[in-house]
Image 1 (cartoon, helix red, strand yellow):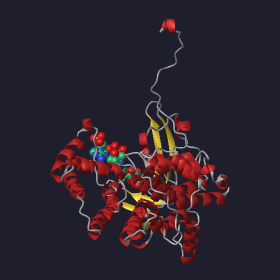
Image 2 (spheres, rainbow, N blue to C red):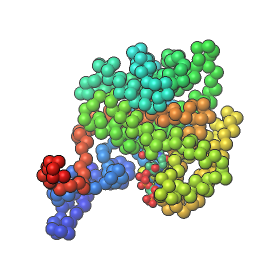
Image 3 (cartoon, protein in one colour):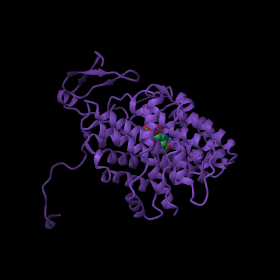
Image 4 (cartoon, helix red, strand yellow):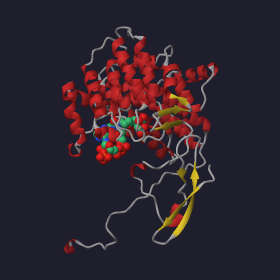
Length: 430
Ligand code: SDX
């Protein structure tokens, strides 16, 4: 808290109201406008909540101007170099890095919750085989509340904790099952002798007829991508999870809502959209035209993978992913012409005044699709990858919100622009 205040004077009435300033450990202060309407009769107007702090949170800190991203205070580049996704998940949920015993217990609990209920296979088989995996994931996760009645009492911290564990543990199993169903392959069961990411890759790609030959480079690269995508403060899908959570809804419904929000091309769906855009551009010689089209408001075309609501500098995750992309494609001896297109597009856009003035830099989604492609992850599974990783962030925020005394049901207001009161008239008078 701060003892500083701001005063707002209404020029219509010359009345002045005083409001407290709220500060955190890092980042910009905020004006606590909880009493604004009562004191002044005004609401605030902030479409997209670009200037609104929705909650206090200790999980992730972003400094958009400096390109800083901290998970529980740890810089993302240090976690990317030294940690692993499951340890980062523990950190996001619990606030501290685990000692060996705590990590081993956490990993063991996750490992023993990876199976999905057999009846869920019938649920998946209810989809048409060409259903988008995000549709199958969203529907399947929402259905988990129908299977796990022992984690639906939101007032019981142990039930909340177990639900979080189940979601982190089962997301890869259900995601892989949805993919296998969409290509007509039999579902592979999770193997407890494998680590979290290797287990997922086996469920995705192992066929009954032969053992999977998996390069450790692939598992390491995917683990790193999961770390980079694990959380990102109050982004659209996390805010969705929090809004649904504020009504007391069960965690499976909350995370299913987060998956739905993530699917949009302006958010997590951008990684899939980037690859389609690069394929449409086709060749480095066409990037100039694409940049010009993206600058034309009437074109309805945007450079997918560029721009960010918060980062007005390079997305620190994009920097890590860009370097990793070049290294991985070299390590795997993959020569992807789309990488040349991406690099040419980045070079042209970063020099163009339209992008420079608007501080539009490549974001986390710009290069990640190229890596998923090199890892032989199918394009329609790119946003599913994002959802698997972001589940740890979503459940960390959901758990945090249940412990926050300031949590209230989310209910924004509006500026009404419709018709004034009028009386109903019958057909004969219309
Ligand atoms: C993610 O919030 C998060 O943290 C999200 C995320 C996470 O980890 O959870 O980081 C993940 O969602 C990354 C973003 C992925 N989306 C894309 O790559 C889609 C393309 N980018 C945009 O649509 C856009 O940049 C957003 C949605 C990311 C940000 O939108 P804002 O902050 O609302 O910005 P805006 O739409 O108001 O744009 C500001 C200006 C506009 O021009 P002017 O009206 O000022 O003239 O920049 C232009 C926009 O037209 N602009 C673009 C552009 N992005 C913004 N112009 C061309 N290409 C683009 N990509």
